Length: 211
Length: 229
Image (cartoon, rainbow over all chains, first blue to last red; front, side, top):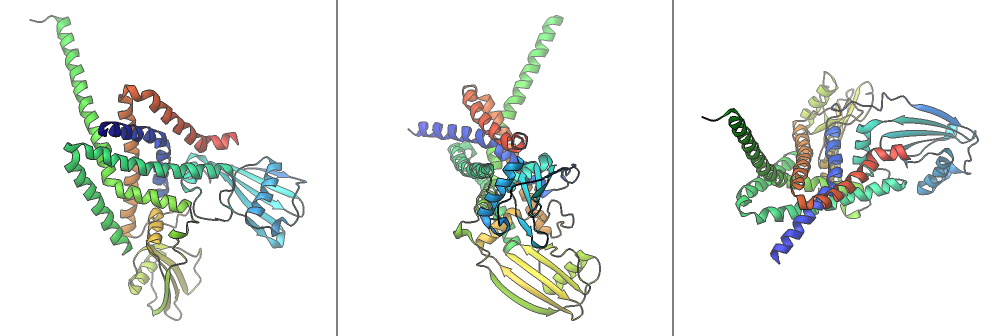
């Protein structure tokens, strides 16, 4: 019984670990990029943006007065007319010019829409931001900001679920890893020393930073 | 006396044995390091994983920290500092007995004024100075444990696209070194697990399925979305 349990946990540890390993690499590599912005060359500033202007766009009435998800849905209708998809980052209305500016984002690409509500015209600026920004974007997505509109694209929500799943599986893998290590009697002592050393470093550094 | 083909065969055998020995030692240490790294970094890993979850769920009320922060404000006389922006900030922090990472809150300082923020996990301090009056207004925000954890996840002292943000507090460098250690440690654990899995011939097929599924879904997001949609 105990052996069957051990084998079962070991197999789950292996297969779940293999499944999340690409996600773990995405988060690990993007951590290094976020921690050392100079490490990978920035592409976003260099990549030339393509620009086009769409005329006679159907713009819903009183679009500027809508709020939150309702406004996002109305803007997604306009995006549909232009053949654009992605996560609406934020929406900025400029009353003096009766314009709405909003970024539409996806990993590795940034699109800026500039809507002239009176002229029913939309300026579309599309820019490739490269692999580095794609990894960073995914690392921060969906994130804590702009809660009212965040997750307005199906794929952002899907990524959010996958990111959550990666974390839950990481907890399972680390707890099952502790069990698998503890079964190895010969490794217990050194393992305990390392666990203790990690706990001491963790507590010390947090105490010094936060106290 | 051995013949030349025999010597060559003995040489080849010795090389094979040496290679086998090396692989055995590598396999043992690959496995050991897999859980040694995991055990040392365990608490760091749990912290970053858990706070990642919190950051992705800002609506979870139990982890709210900003509305529950403690605030107080003091005014203190100061000596006008000299030097560059960072030197001025450091001088003022010494006078005001503050420690932490300097963040720039205004693009361009107004003449006679110097404003900045000092941050460390659990503490956000807004400093506004008026050199004409020789006064600094210091707004303290003290966060609860959830706030400390939130900030620890992102406390690197740098920001992509903002060259002005540089690590200027030694503890920020220490913490970001731990962030790096977790990232590198996780990468090593992934690589060592791939090696160990590949050695298990009976588990290759199902393992390949699990890895392939993860790889495809990950690649779909990293490169596929921008190409397909």
